[in-house]
Image (cartoon, rainbow, N blue to C red; front, side, top):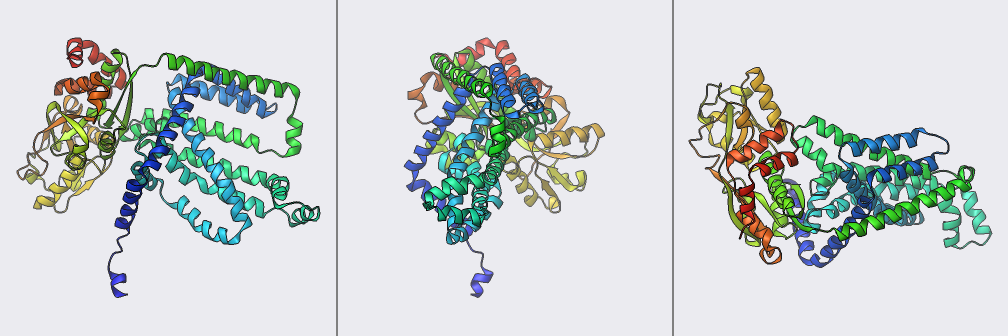
Length: 572
């Protein structure tokens, strides 16, 4: 007993063993769900995306008019809000987010309402499910992403899985509550007329509990929307990726625009679901022949546009390539340049930003064709050891990369060993999982003069903002830096010497491809293998992006200026 109180229970290792066992033994089951779910998402995205944006905006406005019953505030909001999203170039992201939310919400409703009915009919079931629902709703959403990636890889499916678990409880709880609140007199009346349990459920209990159940459905949809940004961390497409990228790069404007688009979507869905939750008397008052015919005609136009646009998209299908990368400025530049080169050769390119560990896992699992974002031998050393046997390493696409502790050149310090009390004894870092952060932590332990220093984790963008602010104020600052990076072209900086070699030696940025790519897509494999450029090239693209140019335009600018080099990547 004393050992149990003193010793740490290995809950983490138990959990990992369970997940590993499920991943190994249920691989076929998870693969079936992953392929089926991804196919469903792709089809839904293709159908919604096939409708011209302006047509969809008009159709949604008509639906808003039909459900608003002579109130014009909501239709006006839908029209202007969706028009703003389209104007900001976020329509495709909005469509992808909508399908993610709708699918996860539908699954939660299909599972949640029967569970809620079961809870209402059995106190024993309620006693078992209640703590499980508490657990599902209070566990941080980040935690669900870990098994989701292990089971389903990256993409929309793990996002739906995590959203489903997090958003399911309200539908279950409100269904249980609604049925339990049905007046006893109504129950007794149904029994006195000889109703069967099925008749009583569908004719009495569910109709009377409808308002409460719909309130739960509304909460489920809102919780699914709240998971959009988290789901983007495992490759789920949509507005969440734009928000996550803005957070990582401290891009206030881009974050605000993507956030506004998400707010518009949330309010639109919320108001539509609220309009469905009306009592029978009000619904009868709202009925009219013209509303009915306009509604059916609009739905028919929408369905026809989806099907027709889908066939047109299939006819215009292109060769495809999927690339994954880390959300670092250097890798955004290189991946976008390569993507623009592929597009000029007629390819449809899918780019997915991921955490570095997930990026390696994705290529090793064959869910992406490749990546040009592998920093070796130091930064991604752990990932290389774990995954390199399951993918093809194609060698360095850039040499002379480096990581280290960086300071402005006006600071009177040249070595890590010289640091004393500068910068409030704080190293400003980036994302906690980055290799440079692990190296910086190693430096703190290796140098006695840094024993009372701390490493402050943040994001790449936050680090850049802090550096810019310190330089403008001529303040001391020590950051985790690397090259290539646009900051070397914008500021006068220097690496601190590292006598104990804690930050590692010079690195190369490498290309990796999935197993079988050479046989499946030889031209893609050849281009990845041939892809090489110089540090100055990358930094020029990075600086254009930092100065306000979109990654696509900055990449296209470089591609247009180097046609011979780009063509050489595709030559045999």
